[in-house]
Amino acid sequence: MGFNFSFFGTPEHRVFNYRPRYYDPEKEALKEKFGKVDGRLEKEKYVPGSYIKGSFRDGNYQKMRGANRAQKIIGAVGLVIFFIVLIYIAKFYSLLW
Image (cartoon, rainbow, N blue to C red; front, side, top):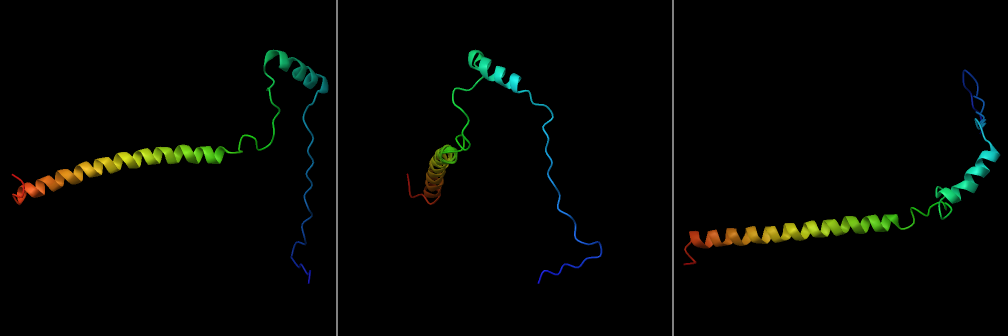
């Protein structure tokens, strides 16, 4: 069932060993304290997903709005060309004038 034969043997799992390079709690406290005064600190705390919530819907609306406008322009130009061609055909067969 769990037979795993290989020439080199089974590899060992890799260990994630993360150590931050430098962290100064006093500096972080000062940055947070004076960030409110300087205006560097945001008014609202970061909430994961807050920027994404509804951005798909808004982006799709903007895209559709532009597409609808382009479709209207193309449709109007198409109608004008259609009527111009229709008038030339009518003149050719002398149906008009």
